[in-house]
Amino acid sequence: MQVYELESNAKINIGLNIVGKLENGYHLLDMTMLPITLSDKLIVKVNNKFEKLKIKTNKKDIPVDESNILYKIYKKFYEKTEISPLGIEIYLEKYIPHQAGLGGGSSNGATFLNFLNNYHRNPLSIDELIELGKSIGADIPFFILNLPSRVQGIGEKIFEIENNLKVSLVILKPPFGVSTVDAYKEMKNISNPKLANINLIIEGLKENNIELIEKNIENNLEEALLNSDENLKKFKTKLLELEDVKFFMSGSGSAYYAFLIKDIAEQFNKIKHRFNDCEVFLCNFK
Image (cartoon, rainbow, N blue to C red):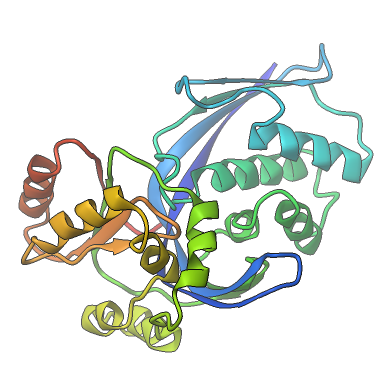
């Protein structure tokens, strides 16, 4: 039996615009996505005595049946490549909160897909991996490449960008999640959404200009959810009471992030104390 330990990292969005909608209902996006060091672990045991996938995890509320994204990746990979399936046992050690807009499930799927492809000596090209990943989850193509990127379309158009931002990140996950489906549904009630200036955010990331970045961040999904979600409204009000730290929602939330530049440990401890009902993480860009 061969054992592999894989790191599966989260992401944050710095700016998220909804720029259109396709006939099939999918929304067209323009945003930046950046990998961060907050990570899950996948312990993968290859055991060729059987030809199936077994999943175990440290979180009781995560399904381990065929609805798990790892199952979907496993099935699609072997269908696409027509290779005989490996017998695999995975222990998924979750640290990335779910229903948070941090991409934890998509990251797990992309990490496992890259592993399978590498193990079988790369039968699929990068483009084929992205196409396969896209059919399972919109954020999977980003995590296949796992580089600071401008992401467009429904998540499949990925352009690498330069990130020279010298900061730490605090991630705050409130004790509730939000529905991505609800966020998109609520968009129809926003007649004139505020748009992030993605070009200036990219310039700020390159030039290490935190003020330029913060001034140009908007998130259309947050704007939509604040229209309807009472939990989120109350939480956002509490965040706005902080004088020296600005928090921004990642993706469809409910997690928020802030950039910490000085007195990092002190600021982190203050935030942790004030939001003691939340999951709070200190991390960096990857």
